[in-house]
Image (cartoon, rainbow, N blue to C red):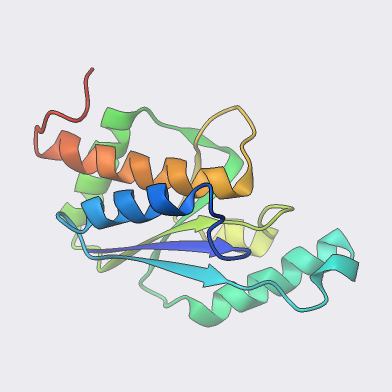
Length: 157
C-alpha cells in the first residue's frame, strides 16, 4: 500500500518543514509515502469562497484514480484515537488497498463533491489548527499508527 498526502496550498512553511520531512522519512520504513502539494488557482485571492473550493475540487479530481482510497480531513469528520487509526490503516492494508490518500483541503475546506467522493471523512480534533500545522500532525499520527502496528516503543498508551 502506498500512502499519499495531498494538500491544497503552498509549500511547507519553514516552521513545519523539518518536522514534516522527518516524520515522512520515518513512515517510509513501513510504507512508500509522498506529498503532493496542489497549488490553488492563480486568482484564488479574488475568487468568492464557493468558486474557489469548486476550482480546487476540479484540480483534485484531475489527480484521483478510481481505485484511490480517499480520506478527506474535515472538521465534521469522525474522530479516531491513535490505536483506532492504526487499526484503520491495517484494515486498508488487509483489503489490498493500492493507494491511500490523506487530503488536507484549502483555506475554506473541501467542496461537497470531494466529501461525497471520499471513502472516509476524518477529523483530527474538535480544535481548529493552522493549515500548515495539520500537515505536521497528520504525518506524526500516521507514523505513530505504523509504530503501534509493529508494537514499537514510540506510542505509550
